Amino acid sequence: MVLPTGTVDNGQVVVEGTRITRTATENAQVIDVSNHWLVPGFVDLHNHGGGGASFSGPMDDVLRAIDTHRRHGTTTVVASTVTDDLDLLGRQAGLLSELAEQGDLAGIHFEGPFISPCRKGAHSEKLLRDPDPTDVRKLIDAARGQARMVTLATELPGGLDSVRLLAEHGVIAAVGHTDATYEQTVEAIEAGATVATHLFNAMPALGHRAPGPIAALLEDERVTVELINDGVHLHPAALELAFRHAGPGRVAFITDAMDAAGTGDGRYMLGPLEVEVSEGVARLVEGGSIAGSTLTLDRAFKRAVTIDRLPVEDVVAALSATPARLLGMDDRVGSLEPGKDADLVLLDENYDLKGVMRRGEWVVDPQLA
Image (cartoon, rainbow, N blue to C red):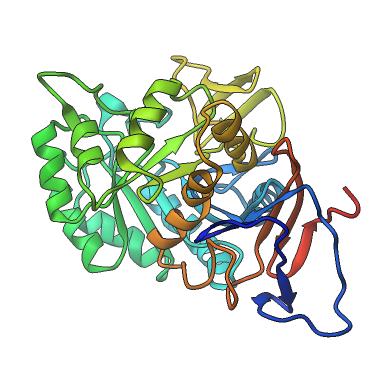
């Protein structure tokens, strides 16, 4: 078991109802999972969909995307939207907030439309707009208290004021899809920005004379950096640079998943844009930009341990404890401790997923797998 204090061999977790507890009752069911790893359920801060469905779609699609990622170990997920018309985003926020209120989602992340056309990635340029605080406030209000994060190009007009607005309302301001300089990024952090949206991607490269946003985001202890560990978005050396510099306490592994996660190759839509997925890599049909990922967090876990050679304890922190703490949910999720939700992931000796429990119920039953 991977606990906050380290790895324990021959450990035992006791679940009663929906929570982890300290002692077992006499008639407790015993499940022997010797020679397996038991880790806390994964927490994904940045996820657009999966299972052929999108968090920008109707209720049935949203539920399918949630279920897909749960079956890959993500027991806590924030639903990310993509750039669209403000009114449409507001209506979608209303739908997603219902699921957040009943506990199926951990909240809403608005990625766009307040991003730079220079670094738009897989977002529709014609729908982009400057981060006017009035517009940002509209989305916060539409989310009915369930807005968790907004990604902004903070160098744009209204950017810093919007960061301050978000901080005042307890919503995470994330620097991303940005063309900011080092100095402008430092200003954004001082104004209250605390997250780097998929560090390295959709921002200027690290330069020795123009260090840009990457250096500013990595060096500040107040900033949590998102990393997409799928072998496509980042070279292993870049991932190691970020992980070693920021440490597991400031790294959150994310999927940035789109509809094809957990499904397969083919044509998909990401908001209003068409995406071609080939050999697991998603790219816009027009222009060829990387369009999110097909990643699930169990695959990110295995890659981090077996290819990147990161310590299991650090990987667990980046997948569970750190994002849970950022969301203010670490009193309930993110670690194996008595009193917390019984969110568990079971992996075999090869780090392949064999079981998932969410709030005391098996999503993937290891006895049936």
